[in-house]
Image (tube, rainbow over all chains, first blue to last red; front, top):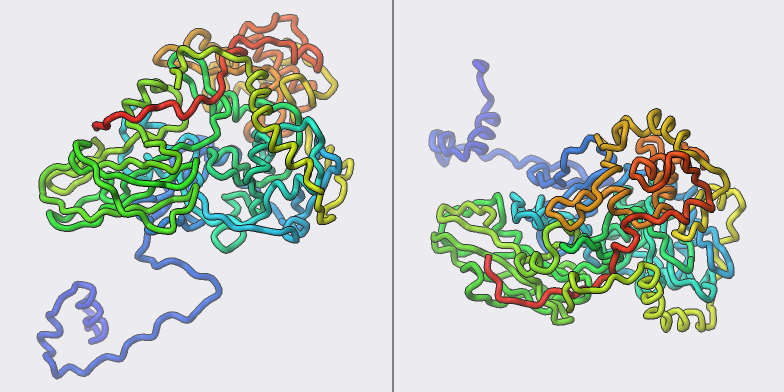
Amino acid sequence: MNKKRSRRELLRMGAVAGGSLLAARDGLAAEADARKLGIPLGPYGERSPFETATRWTRVSKTPETGSSFTPIQNSVGALTPSSLHYERHHSGIPAIDPAQHRLIIHGMVHRPLSLSMDDIRRLPSMTRTLVLECGGNSGGEWIAPGAADAQRGYGLVSGSEWTGVPLAALLAEAGVRPGATWVIAEGADACRMMRSIPIAKAMDNSLLAYGQNGEAIRPSQGYPLRLINPGWEGNTNVKWLRSLRLTDQPYMARDETAKYSDLMPDGTARIFTYAMEAKSVITFPSGGQTLPGPGEFELTGLAWSGRGRIDRVEITVDGGARWVAAKLQEPRLPVALTRFRLAWRFDGRESIIGSRAIDETGYTQPTRDALVAVRGTNSIYHYNGIKFWKVRADGAVVNT
Amino acid sequence: MVPSSTRSRPAVAAMAAAIAALVGAAIVFAQSQPGKTFGVGRPPTPEEIRELGAAVAPDGTGLPPGSGTVTAGRELFAAQCARCHGPKGEGDVGPVLVGGRGTLRTPRPLKTVGSFWPYATTLWDYINRAMPFDQPGRLTPPEVYAAVAYVLNLNGIIAADGVMDNTSLPKVRMPNRDGFVADPRPDIKPVAPKP
């Protein structure tokens, strides 16, 4: 480092250090450096190297199965970049050539069909912005509200715009035979993940999606085709969809009996618990973040309901004694992430902050105590209790 | 809503029927639509149907011919399953397969094939489609029947001389067969929250 530095190098160092040493020495008489050109344009965009939010993945002995969590504490707005959408896979992400992929519709239909992706893309399509939440999101909160941060506790939820064909249109194409009451959906992942879907859902609003956020669905989200069941637990939204079998009975798949059923204190388990009920979480300030000191802040977070629009989100900053309505970002779409915001003055005293969502059915997000009183602590799935964070006097945000 | 502890325990088949009844109107509507079709796709080839493989319903629909004994299953399990599930299904990298009876209503429930799974057909379906974890799809139907027989025997559900095939398997009555109830949500009344 003894080598004499160029003036430009020194200037750059000074800029990085935020120092004015060089400027002071050179004074106003310094000759101005020309601005440097930016990098050329290119075929595919990358985010700024200063943006570092990534999914968090729990360490697994079998990395092909597991979950990765969306960094919701870093999100703005109400969409999740596809690259940060949460994942839950059971046997890895298959590599599928869309030219080779086929969807087979069979069983109790008049005209069994084998469809290529080109066939599916010819059909009338639609686009919906929807929340997708894993049935096990925040499952750790059943035992104890111990999530260190919003991502690890609440990050199995993401928001996307999905484009595809209504499943009802394809079922009409195949001609559902009388007596068919279930659709058994199966993926092309190695374990051929399978779920049973009541035909009423398929006829109501299920979507066969090939697009996500303006491009083809990413491989980790089911490329080239996935089932979307608006408002239902993520596992039913079968990725890499390859088979729809019309039947007169549910198939009682492992992932709807042994898993994704909710064990109650009396030893019974609720089965086919599809809907994700209203839920919300404050993402700023949230666990692991630190406020720089007292002053004005915008408190913000995300709310959603599998049963419709978010009608209201209420915020407390005093541990639940008083609740005030947050401002909701419009338009509020049904079954979609809804951004809420509230101006808040942190006065430097410890504050317990929390949010509760009320959806258009009138359902109010319950407290953890109310949930546990009915369902105990062993049901794993469908936790939607009110989440409180403690903002300490020094500005550090931790679990309560 | 009625707390789950006081609910009756309808058989799952009855629940399925109830759901079907609720959706009946929607189905009739869909079926009565003057079928506008687009003429896309073609009938699946026999090869495509064969490639889909088996999917098995609780009544045994979808089970292929073939059979497997507990004895054959013991050998197969040692060779292909024990490395993840332990020699006796006690669990390792893979989940515990045995035990847990009587724990479902305790603070530490152990959900296994024996204590929790309502249908033996699910075991056949899942092993066939997803096991072994790193080589799913490689087992033949007789091997799957044998693996199922052994795991059921480990759980004391079938005898050591048991044979599983597409007639005997759907008749196996799992211990927790009546342990599943319909979704009663919304089930939580709003109360004044506190942290």
